[in-house]
Image (cartoon, rainbow, N blue to C red):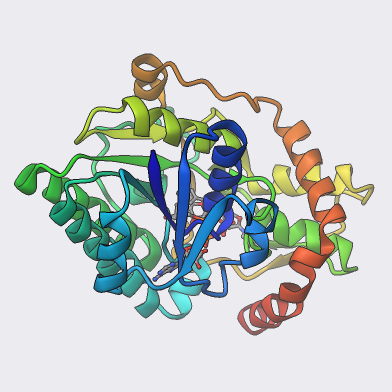
Length: 331
Ligand code: NAD
Ligand code: DAU
């Protein structure tokens, strides 16, 4: 199989490429990534001999069309992904997430290629903290942020291209990922690298907001299951029953790193901050037999902390600029 992976130099995409090279040597991988601030050539260094990296933008019709015409399938990860950045400047989110997905869809339509579109649980909006329900494939879209609204728009384009043009596409909406190679702007790596650089971790508001954590390798195994055996036109929710509030996640990081439980600062809350995400992944489990393997969150967190300790050269060059941006926001 010749596989085109958009956004393969980002967090989830790079882990996807690593796992594919490791576990599926018969697959020939091409990565299409414009290497924005969030993409890193270094994330692909361990597989550089096995993967072709094309640095280009997913809104570039000619490049996308040429690469899609050489592929048997496309897995589309590329997107602007950070909610705080979207609040500060939504324009790149509309461009990459909406126009970029449109460009990929048109190339896939012209070339008759299978597409898997990677999306987020944030398209469903949020749940109350005491609501017993979880998101399912039937939950109405209700995005809250500039980020999630552009991902929702992209999902809608995919659905329309399936119905109107019979494009063979699947969609997955996953909860919050953690693991190696995640940008230090995101919650877990930010707090780990704050401790490692002598800064105090920063919690938005009271830290009561709940996220449904999943290890990135479990997400990517689900993407492979859907790519191989998912039904075209279907949406699958991916989640590992990992609901935790932000304060408890932060306290776990502090404990695992030998710090006192109160060694952090409360900072100004995120505008429109979604309260809680929770995924019911029964369809994926029942139809495709997927199960998460990383069911011990604390063990996964310990491995992630070790990865950031052991790979300072990967994140250190990014850290000061990210914290300078946050300092503006948190002033
Ligand atoms: P990331 O920000 O770490 O990586 C995104 C990658 O896309 C980067 O390598 C970047 O250079 C590339 N990119 C961005 N705009 C591009 C453009 N216009 N052209 C070409 N490349 C471009 O993101 P991530 O966390 O790895 O997320 C990957 C996908 O998974 C996204 O679609 C995101 O919405 C989705 N997702 C993420 C999570 C999560 O918890 N991180 C959960 C569910 C879904
Ligand atoms: O749910 C899936 C989504 O998860 C993905 O679609 C997004 O691309 C990904 O970024 C992530 O979005 P979140 O907004 O949930 O993740 P983030 O890491 O930014 O924040 C997680 C929680 O932690 C959130 O409630 C905000 C809070 N937070 C975040 C930062 C950066 C803090 O309390 N302090 C922080 O410093």
